[in-house]
Image (cartoon, rainbow, N blue to C red; front, side, top):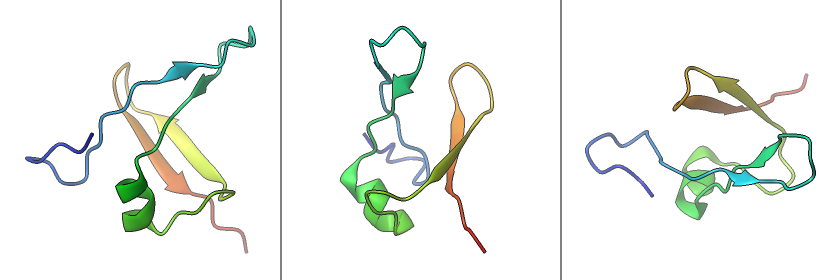
Amino acid sequence: MKNSSLPNIYKVTFIDSNDGTGDVIVPLPDDLLKSMSWEIGDELSIEQLNNREVVISKVVKP
């Protein structure tokens, strides 16, 4: 869900991968994918800022 007062912030709920690793699935909204020109299969980097915020960016390979 996009926060209307802060256009570059999206709120999503992580989904437990249920594989015992502690990994999570991060469902990204279609409008975010489109606005960032991300596509299925792109490699993304996730940086945790604190317990509630992360920064996600596309990995650009040379």
